[in-house]
Image (cartoon, rainbow, N blue to C red; front, side, top):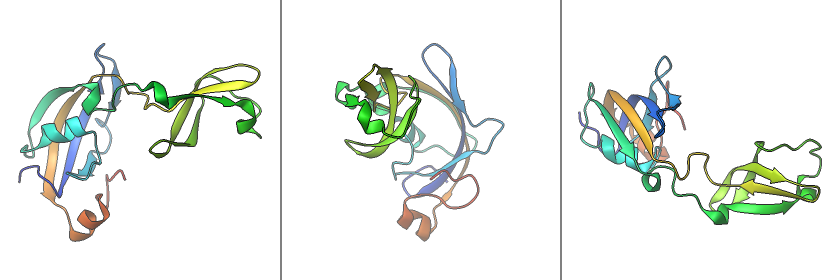
Length: 159
């Protein structure tokens, strides 16, 4: 079977940046299982998998716009320290769940002073081209329930 919409796809991958630094990998772990066409993975990787079959191996470089997007200055905000009431020790690099422009997301503290805290709501990999070294492990038709729910059920699913 070929990778297409409403297919359950299992892949192993190693993700690197332009410097060759390994950012993530499923090797020596469970394969990533996702529902193709449901937006469960970044668009550039999803597009590069179309038509592939179990056993295919390939490497693909995905530009930032088709990965986690370009860095957006609109996602950086200065917030009053009062908004962090009840949290005594705040440090640069800490992450918090917060309401962002597209719903609930994660913000990272990038600077702070006595009165204000600057947070960045960009994805940590925003603005970066990413390279995936991929092996397609399995391709099967999604169940009706999986297609309806928009994600794969069972072992290896990451929803």
